[in-house]
Amino acid sequence: MKHLTRLSICVLCTTLVLGCASQPTMVEDVVQVAEQQNEVLLENERLRVIEYQSKTGERAGMHAHPDQVFYSFSPAKFKFTSPDGNTAEVEVKAGQVMWLDPVTHTTENAGTTNAHGLVIELKK
Image (cartoon, rainbow, N blue to C red):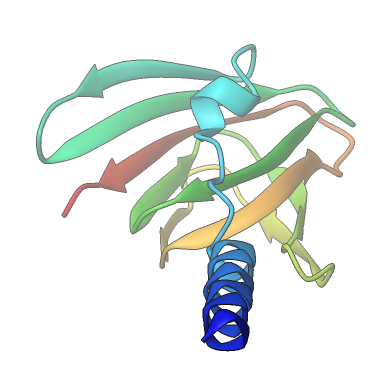
């Protein structure tokens, strides 16, 4: 009986540890990660509008976005890095509008000019 109780406690502890380890890490909000680059212009129960500005070489740490629309006021080049380390570079033109599915990444202004745009995040 003692053996069965110890075994049950070990199994329970192992399950809890593995369960906690497999939970996704909470990723921070872009406004908290890069406060100097992002200003919330409007927020309600349906959406959030963020003005984004970054200088050449500036980075934002790991953060997440829900479905979003990005409008670029200026030409820019971005380097995005996903949590698994994959990178992608994207160039945008002034006036370009893009739809982006939910994403978790870091962002770097990899261009030679300052970047300026609007991020419109949709809430579910």
